[in-house]
Length: 203
Ligand code: CO
Image 1 (cartoon, rainbow, N blue to C red):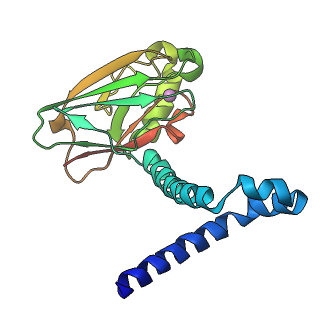
Image 2: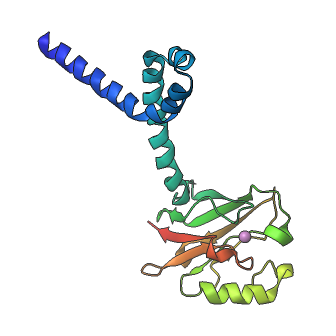
Image 3: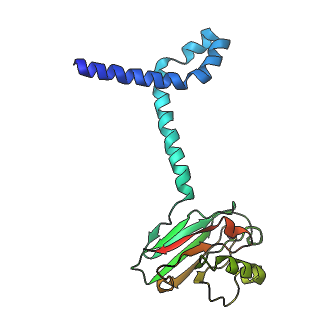
């Protein structure tokens, strides 16, 4: 009994001190300006109940935010769907292809609203070493070629170039991805590969 009471007391003290740490900034100015009305409106029980909830929500949101930027693509049945948006971003940074797959399909969904000429997206896969040259040659090929040089054999696979609200896909033989070589997926629209890029691996 004594131990339980001691733990409860300690827990309450921690909760109150945690509450006390968070509450003073907003509460102090109010209390200083209007002590009689502001104090009863914010009873200790209410703030004690809300503070832990707020404390729980903040770390959860914070841990989700960085994860979103480094998320691996969800792969099901040798296929994945990734998104491109109007902020020139893919929603994933890596695509891991199961080694058991013979062919792999990537579907690209443009979840933005901007037209293809302003915010076009595609998915192009090459080795990391070929990427910059393929981007440069794609730019030279122009938008009518979906910013992909026709017949470019450095390209493992590529989708069409699409605008907001559109979806496209490409399938390719996984045997084209060789062990010991680094591969990238990226958007070859001029300027986009700086942000819209991630890794492709076979695992
Ligand atoms: Co793009």
